[in-house]
Length: 169
Image (spheres, rainbow, N blue to C red):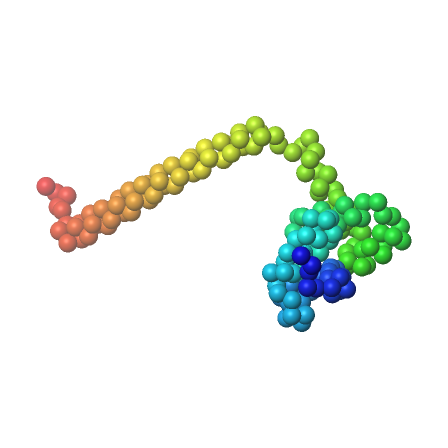
């Protein structure tokens, strides 16, 4: 089935979704008359093809992890003026790409905890949560007992004021 939208319109919409324009899908749908769901499906298809189309007005630091990774992958083979042009076109800084690349590399480094380490950490976390709850209950009991003792002490003092006891007897 042939799409009712011509390739020029699709290219224009993709350009508007891409940085540095980063128009939202809702804005594009209002201005072009194309259904928002159609735009979302196009954006999804473009992302599957590896193109960077966040279609959001968010700053690059607020992009999703997938969009950041796509930018890192697209810029991986670029250097010098080509990298600068790529960054200007998308509203990025080379330092951002370098930091995102380092984060992606660190995610798979040996310092990342293994599944057994994660399970052990979860177990320890649950144990600490249980201990914290137990200590909070104990503290509540002690606070209640302290309040009760203070009340009793106050009552004893009032009793002594109302009915003084003779020390001679």
